[in-house]
Image 1 (cartoon, rainbow, N blue to C red):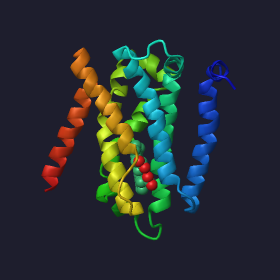
Image 2: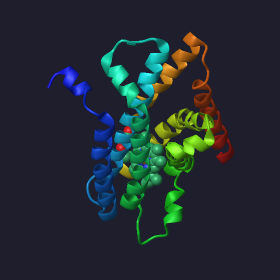
Image 3: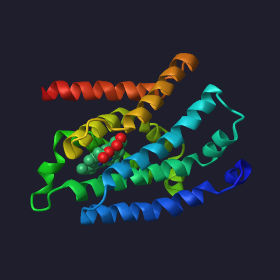
Image 4: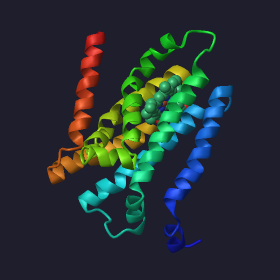
Length: 219
Ligand code: HEM
């Protein structure tokens, strides 16, 4: 299969055709506590999120603007974002089903430190998914874009949660999602310096400030 043929494939259709059964399978794995639904679903969400945000950042910076793959990803940006959100929400549900002890009350298990960032991640992810629906976007006008800019607020909490959760639940010491987050934040920082555009980095800075205040208050 050559490059032109690959780029003629309708990515949106394939994203849903692979993601929806994939999500169903990881939820079933979570329910029956088999396999590794947490890591796989989180990485799927992270890869798709990077494919949503990175090409747009490259386009703004004027990098590889003539590149076919970049333009292809940009054309499918909306559905890359939606499927990323679906994988993350499914990740939360599958991980809870997989790791929580069902003989114990679930609320104390949901309040362990590794899951504190999830209290922010989950509602904002769900909000972004709801505001991805065309009818909702029509009602909101252009303000849906402000809601979606919140994704930049989530990156550092995702990295924090990923590393805390992998240590707490899996007894491993490094979440690969860190690489993706560092890349995205690095590009947002470069964009701020180069283009004097602070739209994205300000959310990243705000997330760091909020996390610092939160930990300072917790002692
Ligand atoms: C929308 C909410 C959530 C988001 C956006 C999210 C995001 C992430 C990310 C980015 C990682 C790092 C993956 C990696 O690098 O390997 C991760 C890992 C993890 N998360 Fe979540 N998470 C969410 C909810 C939850 C919930 C509710 C649980 C409940 C137990 C959970 C449990 C875990 C575990 C155990 C890992 C480590 C998995 C592994 O890599 O093996 N997450 N999460």
